[in-house]
Length: 252
Image 1 (cartoon, rainbow, N blue to C red):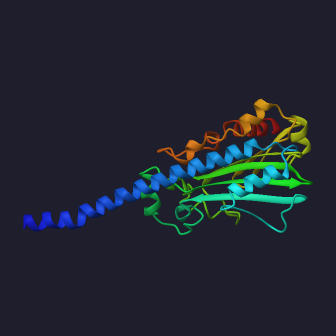
Image 2 (cartoon, rainbow, N blue to C red; image 1 turned 60 degrees about the horizontal axis):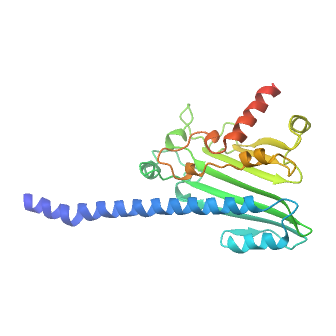
Image 3 (cartoon, one colour; image 1 turned 30 degrees about the horizontal axis):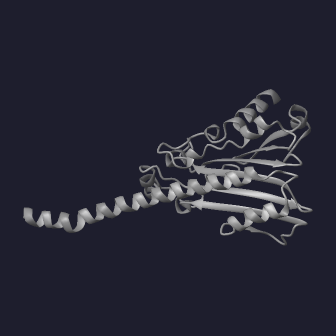
């Protein structure tokens, strides 16, 4: 009997365990590769200078990221809006898993520090010059936080809209502020903050100070790979969240 059990362990259990470990290592490697790509993309976006970088500079970025990039309509030196988007573990993303339940697959991946995430970048070219650029990232919250205090999924909002249970932050530089209002312009003429559903968007103009620009593009990419998940937007882009919260407090 014992020999039969040992034979079963050798033939079935050990190979299954080895396959699971090998799969986890492969996925962990894939996640770190994703982070490396995200870092390279962010550095490429930072290297462009709004209102100075040329169509040729933009084309270099397009050629490098063409596998994940694209545009709508025409894309010429006169007018082009180009975007790049890369997803990681999209099959465990909160927006993919719409049904309520234990979500065992996503929870198992969390044990290895694996989670759904994505990054994107955007540039706009007008009359041969880069007029705006941006970078953003989204990281899923732990599965335990996909559930509301009432027991329902965060995916199903009471007001009929859809809010993904993830951390979502973006930062843009352009000749004009995104979503600027008289209040934000009066407070900070060269930078502003706005929340679109769960995404916090920071924006600033070329006239902003170099220190503030650097802080508003200082994405903490370790949230993509760290073992314990990030649980607040402040862990991804501290400066943007701090100023957004400060602005809300002063507005009321």
